[in-house]
Image 1 (cartoon, one colour):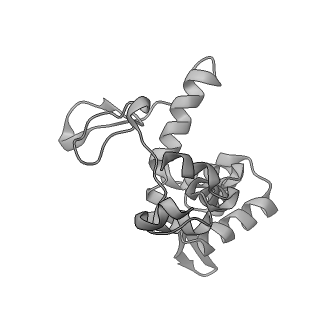
Image 2 (cartoon, helix red, strand yellow):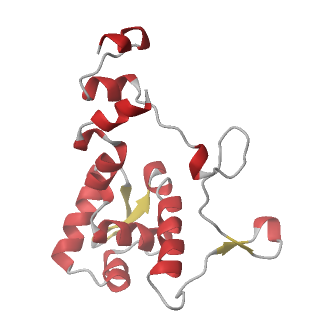
Length: 168
């Protein structure tokens, strides 16, 4: 079964589909800025350094994809700020993983450290970690298995049900 994963068409992978939506540099930097409280266009420009036209295009694409939503903050003149949707908030662990990876492999010295203080306690560092949803334990790479879903099997041109797998 694991060998079937090699037949998955290049564009069928959820990672590839995700990168189509948010894989461009400015997209992730916009999400970072909005997550850090910069909701206005001018603040996002300042925080990302993106060209204004490129930023406007990224913001429109992220709104269209349901990653961000616009909320009005002024009627005169009419202005809206950008806020993360549930889909946008689900990208925060991705940003954390990129931050950690960059701290370790791309920077000599970290520029930012993230932490949280639950219930007024002392601050705790935040880690992006691969954790099993069922048992809560960290996942070891050697213990991860891959299996094509019926959708993946269909995209790969393979029989959809297990009972037909031996016919391929």
